Image (cartoon, rainbow, N blue to C red):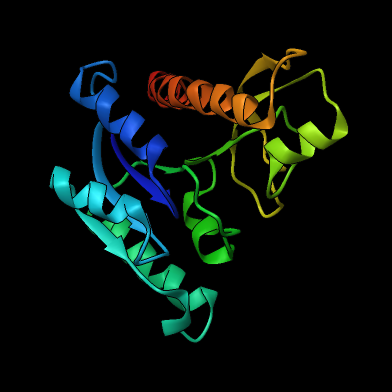
Length: 189
């Protein structure tokens, strides 16, 4: 199964997927394309080091979302991608991509959805005094973090945790759960 990862930042989840593929933990899965909407994002250097094809764009270079999503669709089609994984991609996906990839696009979110959707989910949980939070992998739909839940796992917020410790616990779980979700998706198709 050929996958593409969309990322906007550091790329730690991209690296976790890549490591799982290289280690043979994602049997039958190949990481064939990175899509990034921030040319200066650290993930761009990481993908270059690994020799994986990538498409980096600046949304301001296009007249609208439909224009850059049309280009992305062409890149995905050319790479024969079968599953799209949003891993720290900080944009809402529009109708051009949704129409093409419905049911084949997963998003990683750092909370137990439907609690704490949107940006800064870890901070939202922390400020709310949540006793537990977690990580969700869900199918992408037109809403913000509203798609059907595919996999979820809890993280207990301990009394001694700081927001930094909680963030690290969440990120470690993301690195485990996202490859699991990819493997599960592959087994179910």
